Length: 119
Image (tube, rainbow, N blue to C red; front, side, top):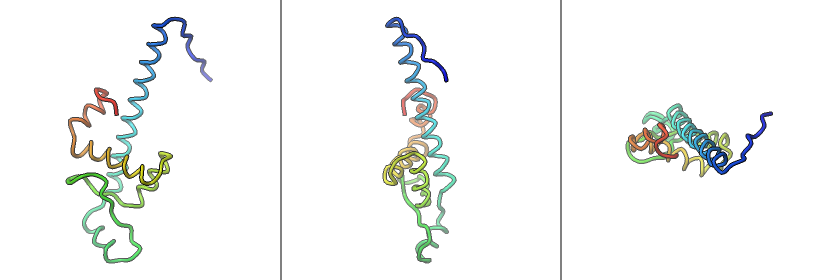
């Protein structure tokens, strides 16, 4: 177990706050990147969509982001949300925001991933 650093001065406190916020921003950017990777692993093509429409009980697709972004397998959202510790609806929103950034707002995505913008 590590001990917390001694924060004797105002400068020490502010330095610690800046350091922890940077770690927090990096972790949030990493989670967004993981969400995009998850969506990519579980992307659905037109053939899969056709099967879901024809065969009852087959997993369908879910459009989590806007036009031009990949659709994801609907059941994969539940798994992702569970790993995040959030509801399925919140997981779908989170995946949608991540996919939207990565596929439709590429300049913003790049800035978030480089640390220029907080996630």
